[in-house]
Amino acid sequence: MSLSEGVSRREFVATVGGAAVGAAVAGSTVAGAQAKRRYAIVGTGVRGIGMWGRPIAQEYADVAEFVGLCDINPLRVEVAKKQIGVSCPTFTNFDEMMDKAKPDLLMVTTVDGYHSEYIVKAMGRGIDVMTEKPMVIDEKQCSAVLDAEKKSGRNLVVTFNYRYSPKHRTVKELLMKGTIGKVSSVDFSWYLDTRHGADYFRRWHRLRGKSGSLWVHKATHHFDLVNWWLDADPVQVSAFGSLQQYGKSGPFRHTTCRGCPHQAKCPYYWDITKDKNLTELYSNCESADGYSRDGCVFKEDIDIFDTMNAIVRYSNGVNMSYSVNAFMPIEGYRVAFNGTLGRIEVRDHERQSWKPEDATEIHVIKNFGQREKISPTGSTEGGHGGGDTRLRDLIFRKADAPAHMRLPNSRAGAMSCLTGIAARKSIDENRPIRIPDLVKLT
Ligand SMILES: NC(=O)c1ccc[n+]([C@@H]2O[C@H](COP(=O)([O-])OP(=O)(O)OC[C@H]3O[C@@H](n4cnc5c(N)ncnc54)[C@H](O)[C@@H]3O)[C@@H](O)[C@H]2O)c1
Image (cartoon, rainbow, N blue to C red; front, side, top):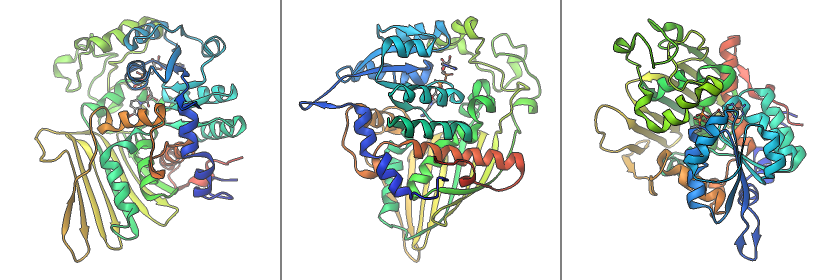
């Protein structure tokens, strides 16, 4: 049966998601105390280390014990062990780690295209899994993950940290309260600047086969927010995309910024040697796998888009016009919800050449009424506007949360990825794509 057939969104979430996922992943309670989880990570790059490695070792040692670290790069996994500050064994073979270290909780932070392989294997061994976004990069992987979860009876959490920053929660709660009546449409534009945007074109993200393109790698965050904000499923997507600044569009090229003869004239030249941590973790480990962290943004093999637009139709009749552009002079976004009683406008200023009055501006504008400024409450300390810290607490400390703030499950992972997968397919096939046609639930 398709995702939209036979089981309603609410029934599915009630069965598979919510508190059940959080409790299962956080560990059982023994006489009031939380049992320590045997915790392992596969994919020990910056995200594995900085979000799911070092903070867990330093702040959650009472509830999680590192039993293994795995990466295909034998040099990087050793650097990661040192940077995380743990003494557990390291592995380059996942099955060997699972056999020897016997984790009961796995964090997947590899390159996107390999998430599904490890999720499926771990669940087949009866392990709870957390995965970084995107859950998967194509519809085949999506079906495999959903099937594996169902068959194993284990739980999968997709760590959508964006939901947990105060600004995004504030928007969710304004919409839940019916502040602007029934939502009729959404305008959503995400801006990646010449620093952050360009960085995707230096690394594996530049290849569809590894990242699913920015439609999946990056936009999965945004599509998850919209699915959650609207409490609705995406149904149909029409999209356009092009590569205008990077890849073949560039005026010259080399392999890496290090040693490039065009350094002096290239606006995207970036000197990785100035960053001690990244040099240690990537450049010094290149001999093992050939992965260059400072690859040329003009490489001819780049097969993703830097300019993307889509119209998405949702199950509640809402239409969204969405765009993401990856070579902007600003980093941030605008999102607006148009409703029967008015409009919510959000402008997020993440990086720009001027100092904005507020990092995030949220306004409610009532039809025939006034504009009201809304101030999000809650700490923004830590990565992704405070979202990273809150998410770790929810997972490892079983922190209490209202229903709408519970951990995102595989269904959320699937729906957000499928929007991007449908957009990519819509461009390739020059036609609208229906999401229920992409994945069948067994
Ligand atoms: N939620 C967020 O805000 C956020 C932010 C950054 C990254 N991420 C996600 O985290 C993940 C890791 O990102 P990153 O920036 O650390 O990437 P990275 O390239 O720095 O690290 C990925 C690691 O995976 C390893 N790897 C590659 N293929 C592998 C395989 N087949 N098996 C095992 N290991 C393999 C690489 O050697 C590398 O060490 C990605 O899925 C990314 O989308 C999420």
